[in-house]
Image 1 (cartoon, rainbow over the protein chains, first blue to last red):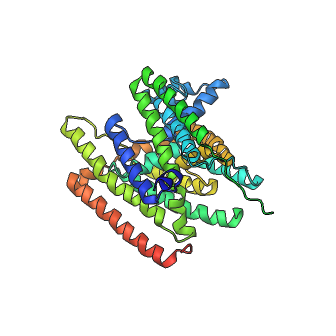
Image 2: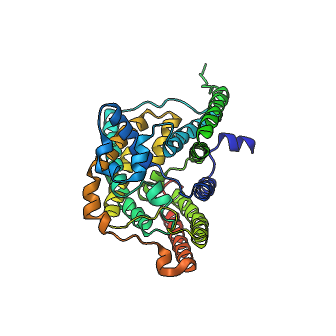
Image 3: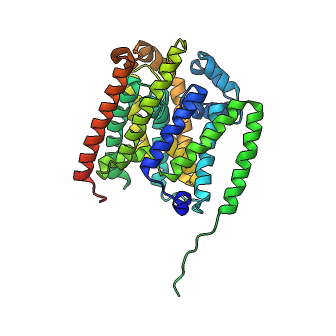
Length: 171
Length: 213
């Protein structure tokens, strides 16, 4: 029993129930549910600023009070950025407690291109759809927002095409 | 003699990083209590995601390439639980005099379809969604570091193009909250029945198509 909890893996159902409880608690305490990519956009903008860019003048940031404020903070002072860093650390703790951590190397150049391209179109998609699999889906459907359902159906069709591409070019 | 690979005990590292997380919790929390709350929630989300191997890419992809819907059905269970809990939070906020309904309620339109669609393609070919990418970086996957670099480029690009999408689609799209149409009780029941039907279809589909069984 103790081994099962520490080593895992836990069942998908256990994960689903715990994530639902955590997201509910976060929503109840902070009045907004879980989201990921707003902070990833801040990360990108902070890096751009570091290299001399001026994202604060971009319409996307300048025309929104909350995004302007977010941009004026940094990696360790923005709440959403901290939550994302927490996800990385939480996953690290989960593998360390089971003694399963090891650095997994990249296998082929083809994978690098797929990872980079996949990342770019995901990132672009999150800006225009106003969120990712968490903000536009996992937190949106329970908020009774129609956008969550439409996002889910669209992502499912995208995943279907992505799977065809994966089978044809990558596997 | 056959070499047996013995896994090194990493519990010392676990305690070190837990201690580190605790000290940071103090520093963030003393700056502002809510920063500490977000830090703690992030760690808990990451821990649960990793321990249960909860991957949204697999939830969307496995029904297609392996005929397996177990993860997809787990997502549905989470959705059903949160449909009830989120609605209670929203309802009580409105009863308590809130002007706007809290939660993630966004305009729905062409931008939702386009963004969801390309996100769906991207997460499958990159082998990780937003949560999965962060989680696997923590697990030590170098590949997901590359996905994150792509993600950073993509979000900046999207933020740059955002005024166009906002002008052409987002500003002209309606924001639809299901309770507007069905009432609070009706919306919850409608959504729960929809989730239950999807669950039933997914289970049937799995029984017939799962190649992993």
